[in-house]
Image (tube, rainbow, N blue to C red; front, side, top):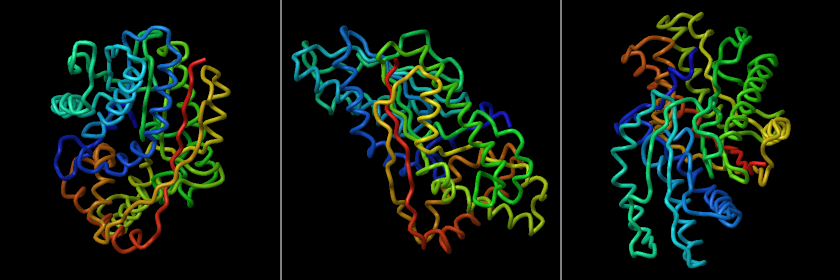
Length: 361
C-alpha cells in the first residue's frame, strides 16, 4: 500500500467529512493547549531576535481543527509581547499534509481564521493587529520526508497524525481475521508494527532536526498506550468494529476472505517508553515533557457518530483496497454503526493519548 498516495481524510464539509467528524481530535487539541502554550512561551524567552516566527502544523487535515492550534500559539505570543511591551512578530504558518489532503477546504476557511485573529484583539505598535501579518501556506508531502529549508522553523506542532505509518509493516501476512495490531494478532505482527513505528518516528525526528533552528520546539500528541505490554484502546475502539463488519461481509460472501486478510491499516499507537527510546537513540532532541493523558469517549446510543468518525479516515483506505463501491461502503459503515450501538456504546471507553514536548539540541 502506497500510503502517501492513498491516505487522506474524507474531504469537504458533508456528513461523512473529517471536518464534521473530528470532535474527539478537537478535544485532544484543547486538552493539550497548556503544554503547547508553555512550549511556545519557553521558545519566546529563549530567542534573541523575534521579528518572524515560523510555525509548521504537520498532518493538518482540513476543517476547524486545522487552525485551532495556530490560534492558540499566536494568542500566547500576543500575551507575551504585551507583557514585555514588544511588537508582535510576523507569523509564517505552514500547513502540511499528504498530497491527497483537502487543502481547498483549508483555504476556504482562511477568512474565518483571520476573523478569529481579529477577535483576539491583537495589537501591534500601530494599533489593531493586521491579519496579513500572519502569512499562511500549504506544504504537500509526507512528514517522513524533508519538507522545509534548513534551520528555518521555530515551532512544529502535530496532533493525532503521527500514529499513521509510512507503510503497512512488512511480514504481517499472518495477521488474519483482523486489520490492525489487535489482541488476536500474532506476537510477530505486534513486533512488526512497533518496529515500523520506531523506524518512521526516527525518520521524522531526523528531518525535523534539519528544519528547526537550534532551541526550536516541537509538541506532538498522538493516540497511545500506557506501556508496550498493553494495546491501544483508541485503535480498538476505532478499528475493531470495522474489522468485525468486514468479517461479516466475508461470511455473507460480499467480499473475499483473502481480500480481507490482506488488508491492514497502517497505524500504530506507541507507549511513552517507545517514544523515549526513539528520541534518545536518534539524538537530535531533548525531552522537555513526556506524559499520557486519558480521555473518555462520549458514545451515542445510536452509534451513528462513531461510525461516521471511522468513515472519515477509513473510507479512502477501503476504497483503495476493495474498490470504489459506494453501496459496499454504505453497508460496511451501517454494520459499524450497529456494532457501536449494540456493543461499544455500552462500554466505558477510556482512551490513552501520549504527548511529548521536544527541544532541538
